Image (cartoon, rainbow, N blue to C red; front, side):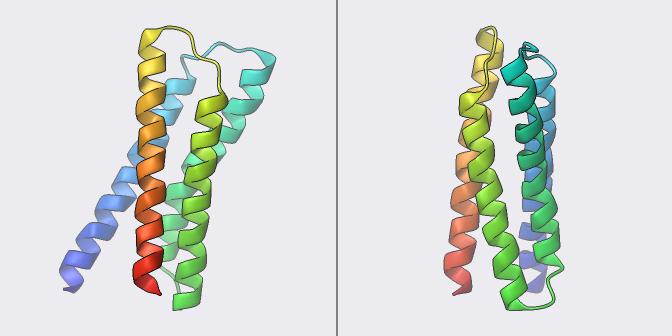
Length: 120
């Protein structure tokens, strides 16, 4: 059972890392308007925070600490989705990538929500 749990943790750590890297790849292509510059900063912080907090959750010293970190993961995924919806993109390729990232942020929110439900 521990092996399966660790494998799932690893997969989610990799998935959140990939998501943050994909956000960075997208923002490199975006127009540098005054609004976008500020949104990009928020988006990169929030998307990176999802995985960082999940790693912290896996190292939690107590159940309470684990739950708090997973709640932060869910919150940061939700915030990432918000910034992705707000940001200005140019071109069909960037729009398609944004939609995929919005979908991924939504899925991560649901995953962290399910983890919280199972932890109760």
